Length: 168
Image 1: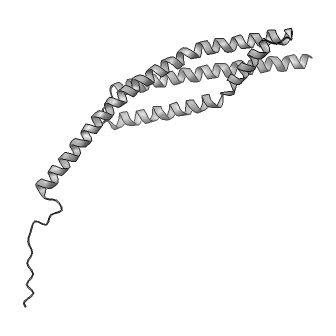
Image 2 (image 1 turned 60 degrees about the horizontal axis):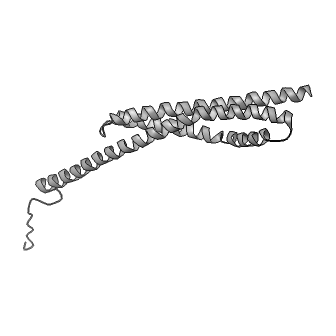
Image 3 (image 1 turned 120 degrees about the vertical axis):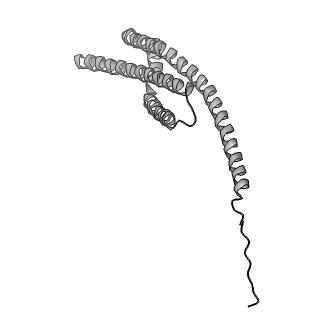
């Protein structure tokens, strides 16, 4: 019985640590999304450094998403705790209810983080659209300049005439 209680307490501590880890991951994701947004607001298409920073942030964010996805089972445990909290067994119901409350509190702290990330993503989408429009215009101008340059320098056209005398 004593060993079971220790195991149960350890399980509760481990589960709470997982909840805390998920919350930290979402906080880190918010920090990265804020950095991405700030970078995009001052982004210039010709700036290689800015592009590299943006790629690095996207890579970091992808890593965080993979870590969060790997811990998705914690939500299933939350559902099981909710069921156990509504069970008829009063001893397990009290423990499950306490754990479920911790789970709900953690979700209550995570939801605003997720909402802020989503808002940043919408702003970034708008910024990216503007950047792509500018880059598209620059590409059209570069093609036009290239076409004009070829016409002016007559690239690809032999400019000297050659005469071959076959009557010798």
